[in-house]
Image (tube, rainbow, N blue to C red):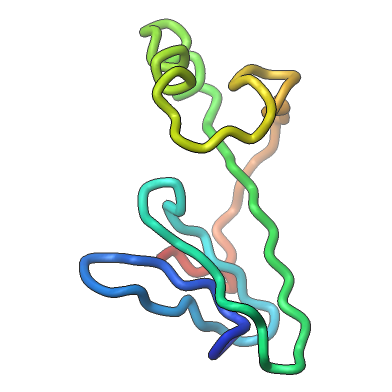
Length: 105
């Protein structure tokens, strides 16, 4: 990913491109910073997959504290579903292993 085929994210200053080689993936806190993509003018296909993963213990804590309801009522962008398991979210169980091809930004 380079030039206009990459996503741009705003960190501590201006927007910067998330750049990587074929086969690389980026894991980052996209919900906490502004980000966007320019029209792709490279002649190569850009593929963007958006996975929003929440560890079960954090979900349970948010439900117990009322934080999930608060987050749903204060959100700025709506995806057409409620913030509940079975609507926008799905419950899965898996073991996650750190892969050298995944960059944490």
